[in-house]
Length: 265
Image 1 (cartoon, rainbow, N blue to C red):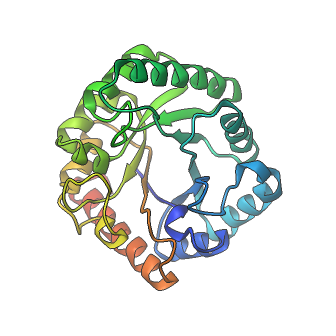
Image 2 (cartoon, rainbow, N blue to C red):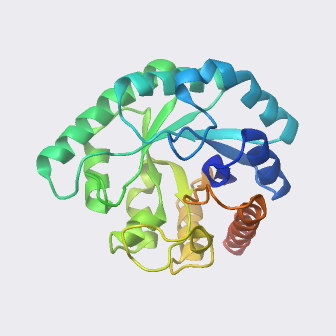
Image 3 (tube, rainbow, N blue to C red):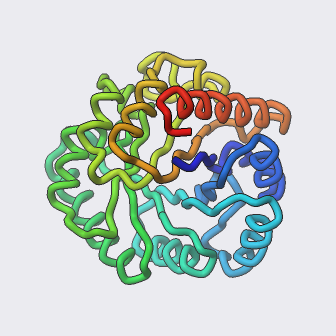
């Protein structure tokens, strides 16, 4: 498995701060935040202006470009995401499921949209991933399995985030085992409690919450997963660089220990 982190943790700072800090913390790679309002990193409306800088930072700091996260399914925005991914060398584009939970029409619309976007991803030679998300049409294991069954494109995969599955009142260890055949990206963070939001950034740090992340990573290893595992901490935009670095380093140490415990490293 490849350990990375989403640059949104450093959303209050420039990309170089994010790259430098994650490199110092020992990460293998980075997931670029293209999340409007949470960062000014990979801004898709002007991606051509930042493409060369991203490639330079990747080379200078020795961080692989693992993925990007862009939550919208808007076709125009996703075209820009796919185009920028090809130019910059990003293999995976993560998006959100959209819609609302426990609404059949909403679920059908989400799956139909994702299927069309997967075809566009295939056109560009990249992979589109979606994760179950609290409150969205795809929000738990049954709805994830539904998407897996109805979208056959090899350019489509599941982005698995244990914190959302945990807040859907499921066991993430059992859930990852059920969907591992199509998992192509992993977002990871901890969560204290099962409330709708993931909590304060420091309690999203791996090891500070209630999720069995050791068992979760062990299940990934047992399932043969060798792709990116990207830390995704939101809500730290107003935090000092020091606080962000502590969260990054603490979480990376926890992930490394989990990998060593299950024999993956």
